[in-house]
Image (cartoon, rainbow, N blue to C red; front, side, top):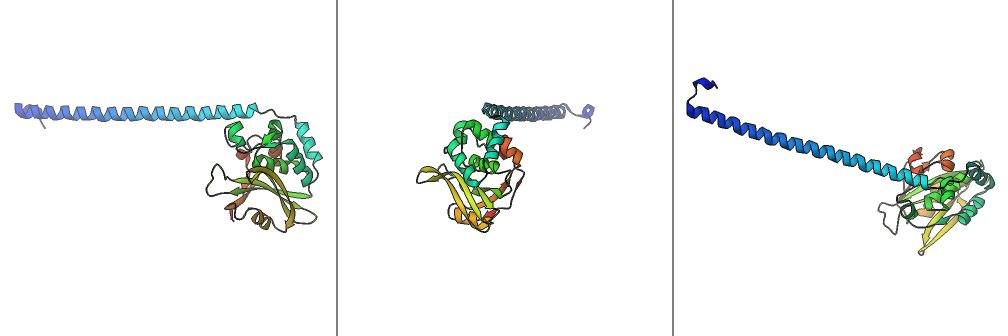
Length: 241
C-alpha cells in the first residue's frame, strides 16, 4: 500500500496493523528465546548429570582394591577342575543379594581380580570368576549363561550361571553362585549329565526363567577387566524356555 495516498484513517489502521505484527513477532521471538534457553539448560543439565554419573562410576571402580596380577594368575593356575574352582570361590567370596546396588550403587560385573579385591559379589561375579579360573584349561569348555526374566522384581531377578563341558565325557554341568533357595543363599555345582548345553540349561532353568543367552567376554577381561558388562564381545541368540 502507498502510504502517501492513504487517508488519515487508513494510515492509522495501517500503523495499528504494523504495531500488532511487531508485538506478535516480539512474543514469538520471546517464546523462541525462552525455548532455546530451556533447551540449552536442559542439555547442559543432562550433560552435567552424565558427567556426574561418569565421575561416580570412575570413583566406584577406583575404590576397588585389586590384588596384584601375579596373585590372580596363581589362582588360575591352581584351579585345575570345576570342583576346585567352585570350592575355592565358595570359600573365598561372600555372596549376598543385591550386592551391586548395596556396595557399588549400580549393577556391576566384576572381573576375577575385582571380585578378589572386594571378597564379595553376586551371581555374575561368581560365574565370571569360575570361567576365569578355568580359562587356561583346555579340558573344559565354559560358557557364561544369562538367564532372563520378562519381569524382574526385588525378590526375583535375572541370574547368571557358568555352564561347563567336560572334554572327556562330553557332558555339560552348571556352576551357580548366589542362588536363592528357601530364602537362603546357596552355591551349587551340578555335575555333568546332559549331552548339550541347551538340555542342561533347560533342566536347570525351565519354570523359573523365561529365556537365556550366552555372553562372550575375553579371557583377559575375565581376569583383569573393569565393569565387564561394558566389555561383552558378543551375545548369542536368545532361547525361550
